[in-house]
Amino acid sequence: MAAIRVVVVDDSALVRSLLKTLIDRQSDMQCVGTAADPFAARELIREVSPDVVTLDIEMPRMDGLEFLARLMRLRPTPVVMVSTLTERGAEATMRALELGAVDFVSKPRLGVAEGLHQLSDEICDKIRAAARSRIWRRVQPPCAAPTAEAQRAATPAATTPVVAPRGLGRLSTEKLIFIGASTGGTEATREVLTSLPPDSPAVLITQHMPPGFTRSYAARLNSLCRLTVREATDGERLLPGHAYLAPGGLHLSVERSGANYIARVRDGEPVNRHKPSVEVLFESAARVAGPNAFGVMLTGMGADGAKAMKLMRDAGAYNICQDEASCVVFGMPREAIAHGAAHEVLPLQRIGARLMEQLAATASGPTHRV
Image (cartoon, rainbow, N blue to C red):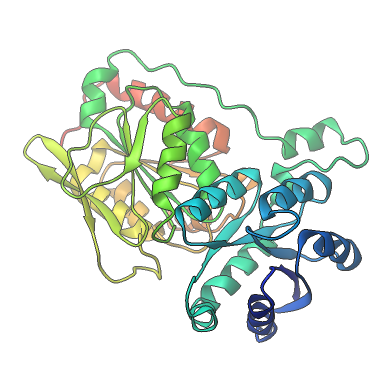
């Protein structure tokens, strides 16, 4: 297979050199050019047509967000952002993902050379995932007039808020929704959450994300959703109408305390190379919530959570996986489906409504209890 062709855009000569070296060491990728600012990058991308671009956010003459917006509009290309771990950097990174970036890497503020070398595997894995992503399905290039079919494939349907089923109050206390996601998952999770009613059962989310970014992500979701969204806190009671996000660098799970469900947020070893790990969250869902759980596996690279999602199904949970056509990377859903974990495989825009339909179906019959 042809090597993945990568363009590196960063105003730091040191970072450009380090990233080029890391990329060129891989047998399946090649750095085909570097640029110090978006203007040079624009000409370089036109010349070499890369498969993936790594893009800094803070640059002179034009910041990375403005360049990303223009690139997605004029020449959609998979982009991995290289962002600084600051509050402002985290907010800008969330905006970059909203604009169409596939993923991001947090650039160390001190010890850049050593830090980037330590992140070598993560950087290269994210470049590989970006090269396989379906960025063209999310962003419509303004070239030749697209067919109606191409427009439907490239433009996500607007999120339609779901009407809560009757009798949801009791079920909202008894049921829990568990979501796992990775590459492309920030926008996919937003799509699901913004469709849910304000009295939805509590939602627990593990999105692969490093420390320092989940607070901004939770705040952004909270501003868009009818649910209250925040980072999970260890020991807190899980309430209907709330969504709880695993803090970056910590595992999230669920436990039972009397009649209530509570969140557990703890440190520990990475699971499937991830912390937080979907496997940890879904295993606790199988063990603690059983038939009161709904599982959702969204877009992402790898297989984290697939085995535990099968445990959820075996314990009586109802599971939905995102379909390949609407995924940025069809890795985690594919693995869950292969493990026999999914009851249904649905387009992203149908998942929220289907959760409420299934919840309504449980309201019409006996309700499972833990």
